Length: 58
Image 1 (cartoon, rainbow, N blue to C red):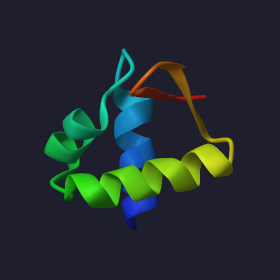
Image 2: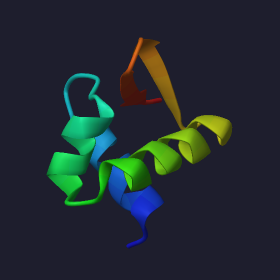
Image 3: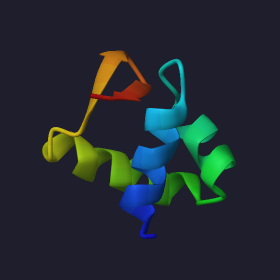
């Protein structure tokens, strides 16, 4: 499982939007890596930001 799949899985399993730091903690990835992956997922329209600095799967 690559980083994008891992981050997307965590977001899909969460009942509420998560911050990048929360995602990093749950995945074990570095927060900088998570931020890059979040940007890629946003560009692919797989996640959205319901409020500033929080992310959720679509």
